[in-house]
Image 1: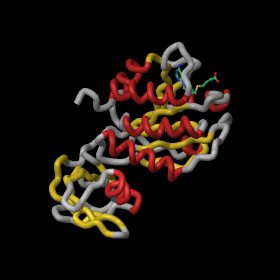
Image 2: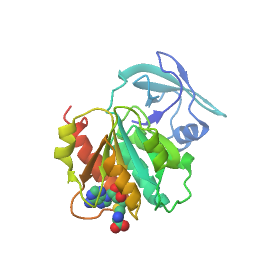
Image 3: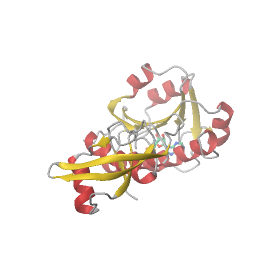
Image 4: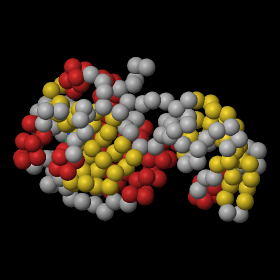
Length: 239
Ligand code: SAH
């Protein structure tokens, strides 16, 4: 069944207007006709069965029929990742969505070789991944910001899983010792963190410094491994 992320509020019989691109996808790619069913979600009102109410020149109108799943509460996990090559950032956004991150923050570090990123494209990747993976929200993707700015404005109570290939504690044990709650995972750039950045990160009272094993991973692999271990240790996999 087709799943579509929409922005309208969802309630019984509410009209829903997908974007023009989504409308084209529904009618031209998936060949839906008036009365055909699909699933929709907006990040707030759970997942709904909907049907195509009208096919107009300027887009499709859907009608929400009934809620099939209530809005789920998901673990509060952010992924902070240094900007790396565009293709790897795109992979990271897709996988972060599949693995349940609520927000992806792109960080500019001293060794970042900033690639030109298209935020609208990253949003579209996140939206598509959320649609196919069955989640009921789409992660926020933030514009790139300096790592130091992110650390300066750190939110009270959020823990940081600092992935450090130069040495850190075994991940699962270290995370389990801290426990669940709001977390962020930090992955550095291909060139690694600079000595000054490493020093600051190691001294942060809210950081847990972890190792992802004896091999050096590319940023995209590191992000996937880190989110997997986080979910297994303190996330929602056992629910
Ligand atoms: N300093 C490195 C490579 C950095 S890899 C070099 O140039 O040789 C990119 C990022 O992935 C790192 O900053 C770290 O956050 C993460 N990472 C990669 N391998 C890791 C490992 N084995 N343990 C923990 N983090 C790792």
